[in-house]
Image (cartoon, rainbow over all chains, first blue to last red; front, side):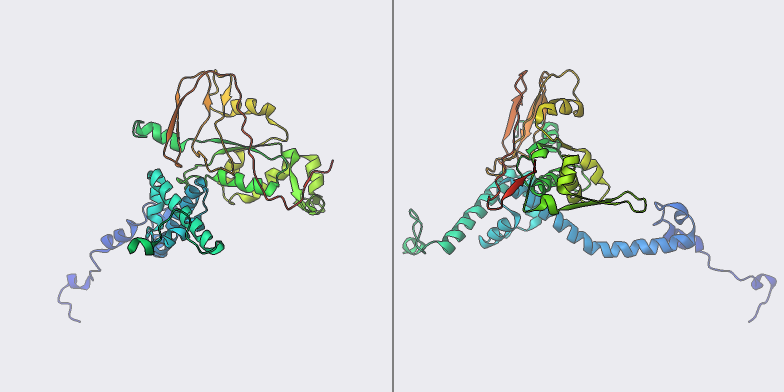
Length: 149
Length: 221
């Protein structure tokens, strides 16, 4: 330890405390109480906020999906179908639209949604006929075998 | 649809509608579940919990509600006054005798989500023990633009058997000449109705078809 003059006895602490503190406080400015001003309180609050944000990125996807499902269920009930029936019959008809798209169609494209509901209903009736009926083709329908030949 | 302005379309989409449900000889739980769906706005494709999209629901003839089974004697409604020894239990029959609206109200209250909006939704639920003779006055006082109107047209259809539900419709006040734009998400058709002065009172009653193998009992007289 060599201090050659008085000025060297003065230890210089970190010059940039202000900016390090501001880095944390800028994320806390909209908090309530002293947590938006005082560093010790803000540090804890900011860390908690970041933890919540991290966890919520996964939860947001779940919430969005339930919202889409609620909306699709509402729209399909308007057309006399229930949500499980609609989705199951759409997948059976190999319509690969996800719930996001279908819920947006239900809001902004009502006629498209109506046609999707009709498609699902027709597929549902076909399923019932296949399960309950006698295995014959319904009248007036050319079978695929005949057509392809 | 393309001929209407964006503002008119939006107005029709987000308008708060009125539904009328007739509870005569109906199980109160089933009616309550339908009420709660419409009060929350879950019958609309534009539903969101914070967007306050619930509608008004009017339930009439609640004194003629019909429980199945022996619920009139067996179902118990409990409450506590807060004082010691104040635990009260009344059967459904006794409660209905005291207040014919209470069963319906408690049923709907229990089916709504347990948050702060529940009270607001309950304020939008209007229950009448008997028929709709007082409905017109009630609606006149509840609707905001009830200034110089004499009669109301309720355009509401709630029919479980056919699927022609128009979810977005509103009350138009006879006497004023604004145009009611009704848009149905069902077909996308918009019916533009010019309201005309007309003294007819349209009452729509809800026909709910439940499989009748359960014997439903009216309130014992």
